[in-house]
Length: 258
Ligand code: MG
Ligand code: MG
Image 1 (spheres, protein in one colour):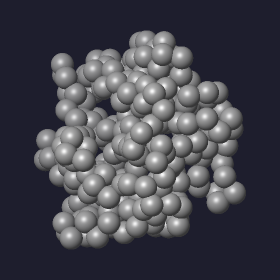
Image 2 (cartoon, protein in one colour):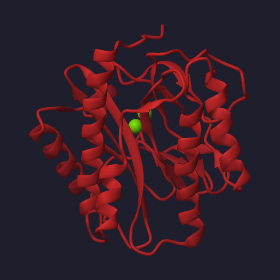
Image 3 (cartoon, rainbow, N blue to C red):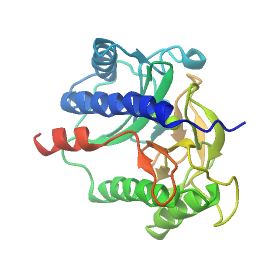
């Protein structure tokens, strides 16, 4: 069942997702060598609550924290811990909120200090691929058009697309239909319609696309232990052009002044 959203519901989803964007920026300010990922989690939880909202991930399916923080070879769903971030790490921060009953969901992968040039290219390519996917997310296109655009862009750069995890519809539940794979064929899959709200979230690996669960039951990491990048926006499908409900503007502003 795919729930189409009214303009009022999309406005609420936008508030939830803008708050995620602002939270990611608060986390971005604090990311530096020596900081523990659990400290970043506290910053995010405090910020979300001080804005009158509820962390979307905390308790979701039993997840213990506000953020998923996945460093280097960890792809997604990393649990904040006493791990101290170090120079050269890449840190994927995935954040969810609930505002007036609707979810926000967005992720950004940060560089810590000087990062290997090839890893920076992985991040750049993944972020670009997200926007290539968003360009395809218009009324009348199909889910496969999104995945195809993401896959083509990343594979052309020599990277691989994680297939075991996918994007999703977003609404009163964080994970609604349809699934939004980051691979696919043009013109195939679910028809996109005005009012659909989906999270597009390429998870792109430097090496092989294969991933495995860590023993904690949550963290997904690359089997070859090479780095992985993750960028995610929640968007609303319209005729002609998608509306990006989340935002990297707040993060970009912080990074510019860092
Ligand atoms: Mg997410
Ligand atoms: Mg998501």
